[in-house]
Image (cartoon, rainbow, N blue to C red; front, side, top):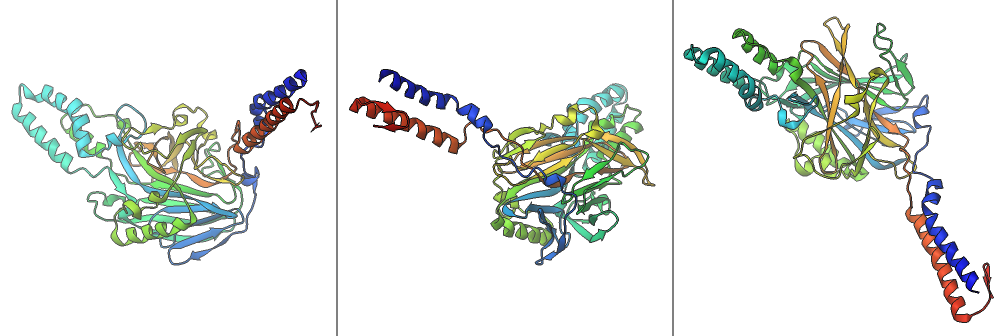
Length: 463
């Protein structure tokens, strides 16, 4: 009898100790592995009420503003609309790369930051050394001239909500297997000295219904990309950008002073990533209408981000808590963009959420390099692209950062779509834990009953 009780208790203990091993053998959360292997998809397209244009396939449903009022994209798994993924192109920001090669909000390239950094730490000391002790009047004149220059600089941030966007297309390009449409910034409102961006910023979009591999420049065969059926690829294009640092260096040249290296500045594309429920589409609709009417960014409950309940994102394979509001802190770098070697072979991917069930999840990805083109459209060179991010309370702010590109045209290619959920090993799932607890409890009850009744025991039945 004593040995039997020991045996039963040992079995219960073994069940508990075996839990981690059993969990490893248990199914992991993943979606259909063939999501990105689909070679072609039938596409239904057209206006969807008065606000949205829609593409719908058996895999993915994608909507965006039908009149081009702003570059904003929402999509979901067609068979499960419980989670809707949102990408909003917020705007562009000229920034100073003080000591890091990526964007941080503390270093916008505006007149205040330039005065506190470049002027105080470099320009003014050089002017004082050059003029102050022998030509004080020239020093005073140069100081006044520079302060006047600061007042004439453009703002660092151009919010896309303050712009009119013209949508062309969509139209089907049969020999390429995609639907083509473009958002073009055609008018800037309320931001003086940023009018140069008009007709010079485009978001060229291609929604693929066939998996394709393309090589944009035959002279650079290593630069190619494969876009799966059901994915949307962007060409983010900026040309004729007027850099504040160019105005500063013109001042320095006039006074025979060493120029500030242009790698001390860059341009960041600000993207907001959020996830909402189907019932929140009304908020997105209201935001689009409000900003189209007022040409200012919606605030508070009028913003779709206010409805976002994003908990986690996976940034190039690393989990990050997006539920917190860390916007008062410095942005964090996407480390992979600082470490890659074979850049043409790599892509940086941000999963909206780690999959907890067997459905595809949304993603945004981009390559860590961009093309610079000359006036004839030929590739001049490729430049490294970095990125930084910060949790903003239920959604993510992502900043894709481009180094100074002078008078060239910048072209970069983010992509959005659906992918199989990353595998998540759950050491003890709630269901498995309940089974183990129940089994152990049964064994304990049996042993207790045996102790009370003092009867022989068969493991299979109590007699």
